[in-house]
Length: 305
Picture (cartoon, rainbow, N blue to C red):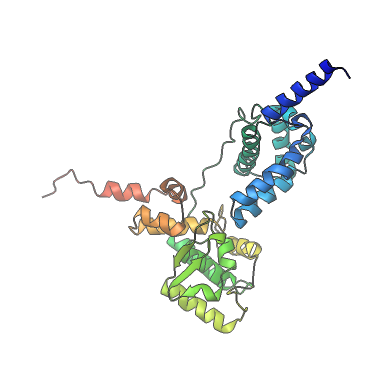
């Protein structure tokens, strides 16, 4: 090898080192996710959020496009992935948007690390999501609770009641521990919340009375509930109550909307739901026209005296 050839190799290697792109042309998306993105997320996210991300990544990496070199992945590859994802898993457009956000963050991380020059998802628009504004009215709540009492799942009534009275997420409810109840307060650790911050949940005395009655009859060790899955029995109760287009998570929306209709300040509701912003809380508040009707009824332009 001549001195000129050696000098050329040194120059080429120096250029690659400066750009931070060693072997980038041979890095597949799958490899980047496994070697770089997952370790990064593990350090940056709470355990709960990290598990959620891992679930999405497991599905994403099951598709063949991740075997391509990351710099060669195109907008069409992503569009085709979403087409197959929707076909295979029958997911909603809202769920597709969650996958879009996950993939976009992966490519933005690669962009920041100078592995790629452009995010291929940049020009793929978000899918239009159907507005969810479903909350139960008082009659529906009573009907649902009666159906839950009659369920073969003896814990369903108490789990649904806890959701209505606290607005807690499903996973938080079924994993409630007796030791975390102090008077009328239940404490969530940072590992149990989306924000990663601890949260105090106020427990209504009626709810406490019902839970205490349940715990006297059933001993599940350190946990209040033994059941970790009530979706099937909940779906049956909804059917018996003739309640349609409703999910368990909408009980959280019902909690927030009921508080608002009872005059609770939205900032207080935000705190009770553990939201980081008012905008997020507003998305939870079902728009059934009651606020507008109440506002209209306060107007008085006609003197009837």
